Amino acid sequence: MALRPKPPSPPPTEQLHPRAEDLDTVSAAEIVRRLHAEDRAAVEAVAPALGAIARAAELSARALASGGRLIYAGAGTSGRLGVLDAAECPPTFGTRPGQVMAILAGGGAP
Image (cartoon, rainbow, N blue to C red; front, top):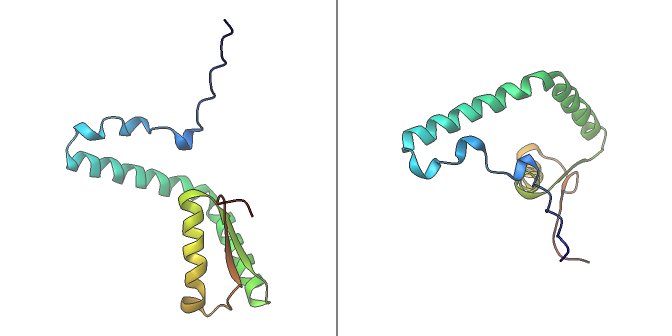
C-alpha cells in the first residue's frame, strides 16, 4: 500500500492563533484583553513602515491629481475592504467613477 503524502500546513495567516485556542473557555473580559493586546501589537508592527506608507500616499495623491487611477487588489476580507473603500471614494472625496477601483480575487470563471 502506497503512503499518501501529508498535505502542506496552511500558511500562518490561515492557522488558529495560539492565543485564541481557548477563547471558548475564558471570560469576556479576558477575550477583550487579548484582542486589545493584539490590536496594540498590530499598530506597533506598522511603525517601521510609516515612511514607506507616507510615500505611497503621496505618490497616490499625485497620480490621482494628475488624472491617474488607484486600483486596489485583494482577496478575502482585505479585498472586500478595498471594494468598500473604492465605492466610498466618489461620494466622500469627489473622485470620478472608475478613478478608484478594486479587483477582488475569486468568483466564477468568465
